[in-house]
Image (cartoon, rainbow, N blue to C red; front, side):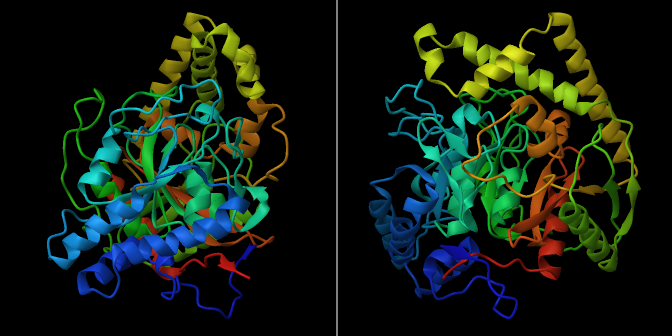
Length: 476
């Protein structure tokens, strides 16, 4: 069982367990010879053996990871690392292709044949020298926030296994919080990076749409982004640098920008304007802990030199807009499955498809028009504010064993009311840990910036992290 550190205990990652080092610290240790990639991987493997039976973070482990770590260790001994992540362990969500492994998407309805090509982001991480530890669990086809799926069962929160990690990047959230390495790939179509990051005490970035290329396209391709989930903001920026490289397979990815996203990350927020978002276009709920975190973050950012004011953009009802996008995607998913396989998928998928899938073409195109209106409203808002600040999640995580009841309502009341708007508008948004909730589970806030200003969300997140370092779960 994992617990949060007591108030008098050190709040930063202890350096006694190599598995708990940040990626930056691992790389520094590799460069000086204090640690090798093999030693780090062995420490992670030991933690996985002890803790994964409880949290269930992995869909499959990579049997070649030790060999890859050994090859990296040889390169470091020769002074010839192949890239900025050489030897650093990384996990990959099982919605993302890794050559030699099947992409099961958390579903018994998918093909178990291994794929032959790496997804673009995996190719980028491998080119940087990262070691793939394994593939992490996901909700089926990434459709919901509670962290369970028909194929791999329930993934549990390392802070308290009675609770969910959140989803759909459930295994990435569990792996990050449990210390199964520093870097984890998630995907986010409505909050699926930021929600588990919030509930597991991680940094989770949904970058600008197209910043990280994706292929093959998933069920929610028009709103989905891949993003880093890490324990520090600087590691998030480091991981983004390797993932965000142009790939011609993705026709919507941005032009290549081979930058180190850590550049400027320590510049702080002095002189920036920050709007506290009061509504994402509808009456989104937020409990007392969520509100307190936003208020605390606003005070910290103001003390650091930012101008902080309330912001109320003229947004349409984004819950209706996203509901139509979500419903259309799941309806198409069900319709493309062979009839004999529809009975083995999560019943909630069929429920959403049946509830939201009967829209007309006019209704769907009206949602697309409203989506453009939302994007326009947020672009106008960012003429006044460099960043907006709001909750990441409306409350703490549900119980891991709780059934999914009324998913259509849960989407905008319990799961993603504060996250999906930024998928519709394609802005960068980041979830940052900020203290603990009243029940001892992680609390968080969310920061968003205008399209293409991923640098600003990283800067502001780093400013909060410097002011309030976040505790991590520890073993009893």
